[in-house]
Image (cartoon, rainbow, N blue to C red; front, top):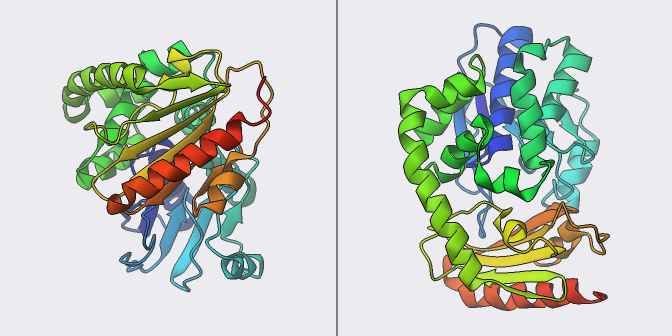
Length: 318
């Protein structure tokens, strides 16, 4: 079994862990499972991906109509790359492909489907499932909890989001199946990474503080000139608690990225569907968070589109 999961994402990694535990316990106990991360690349999401397992599963990522895909779980509104893919999914009668955008996390979605349809006992994974739902659904009690990273799950998120060695991420997936979160972050290969990553996290807070502008409910910042491949997406709301939306531009090794989000602690009512906005520019996501990817050399295009989106989100503000 090859499990393809949303790379550098707590929910993606947790989804792969829960699916693997379920698959071993309820489908094929003798199966050898290996892993491959998937990223939202600007040119071709699945272009160089090999579906080379005897079975292949995609979790927490877009649909692929290849006959080689035997399992699929996703919870994003923007789950399909084309109407043809969605039609292909609607006509699938394998009973092993599932989509429900009402779920906050794909991890909980997989656990509930595996329990309800296949008799899987998810109870021993309860803490992991709970935290995946909190993290991917932005269900923290406040921005302080999301940004100050005191819980084991948030410390592990630091490592997952910064991970550039796929073997470490795959080891985390394997360990999550049978280890609780406090024990996992105490393992040397995780523990040794936490402090230096936390210091980078603190530096990113200060970079965003200096780069951000707040106008008519919307935080806007461009960190593409800084060495920030990823940052805690709740930092903007920690710094600007009265905001409603954030729009940012960043630059990674392989893409220019626009991130768009809703402040989950804002008392103001959401006026826009963020996934729908991002879809117009080739991206996607959820109604409250989304992203758009362009080629690395298209950074000026990313900046221009980000300004357009920020202006659209400001429309109707008080």
